[in-house]
Length: 192
Length: 192
DNA sequence: TTTTTTTCTTAAACTATGTCAATGTTCAAC
DNA sequence: GTTGAACATTGACATAGTTTAAGAAAAAAA
Image (cartoon, rainbow over all chains, first blue to last red; front, side, top):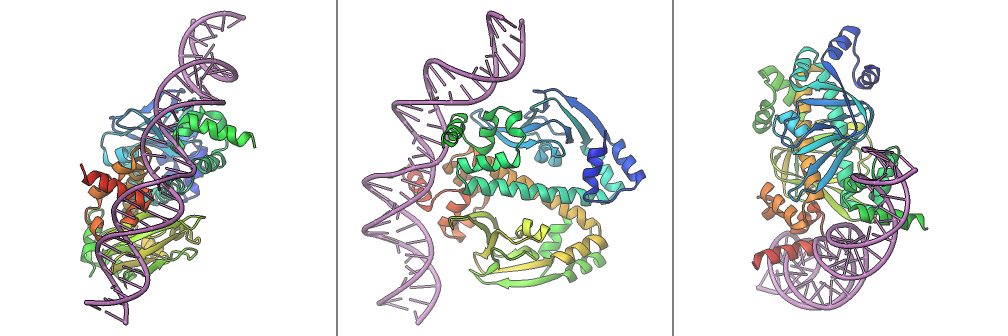
């Protein structure tokens, strides 16, 4: 059950058996079905979730009720509303399973406990956060400097499986364009 | 010299005198004049820099030679190309002082040393990174869901001093629009 | 299977924003 | 102070992307 996650962690820090056991004892399994909400707008995010299997999206609903997908999480990545989770404030995002998924979740206070007991995990989290930050930076840069068509190519390359897994309008939302325009980009591309 | 930074750190972790001294011994002061480069494209970022005084910008030059400002750093914030700094790869960003500035810099390897010797700093860095990440998330959301005009209002609110400190075309670049269009937004606003 | 719902495509009209070029303004250097 | 460079404004035009609406295709439900 936990192999993938442990392997993921061991890319960053070295754990012995006892530490591994302690860590896994803090986790809880959660299975969600396609369409299930992991987090609704206004709730406080109590868990950080590691995706062991499946795929989820985090999205922001703006003042006009428009949805903007801000993150996809496939296998081997983490997802929560970090603002809400870190600062214990009501969430602006909502998180939904795009397909049936299996998660390993750690609760906010238990994570704090973990940091106290095994400070090495501070490092793990720091390193993961750094990579998160960097990858968000790349999104920002892409949004500022690439056209919609280029952004689509980037996403296709970065999430090759995603394209077949989820409806295209979600991808349109993620790259910040209307579904109709994405459709046009695709047909333009195909006819060349 | 180091008071502001130490105060900043003590918002996150508690340091005794010896730890404080050790930490400050790892820093180096650096003064830069307006227009000086802290980092050029292609160089590897060796330092993370804390802005004690002044103001800098980080920007990305795209394939067409267009500049896109991705971060402003005023007093009491950190700036470097984190991708380059963290992974020791050539930088895609360049960092320039917008006014005469004073920095406290920590070198990559010394930071690693610091983490080994005082693991508490892992926590500090993790917490700072979390906040960085969250604020980047806000940029992304703003870019995806707000009009140029709204983005300008947000920046005006978030960096009230900046508006008078630097040329407007830098702000236009930061919110992802042309300088001409920002000028129009402003005149439109003024005439109401 | 048939029906219903969701998703995808296409096209026309429209809007926000970009580009170019000319003019005016501010600011730093001499 | 004068000059030159960087910056800001304005207008005319171009374009990327949105909106609306309709129908086709695919997926889910019955």
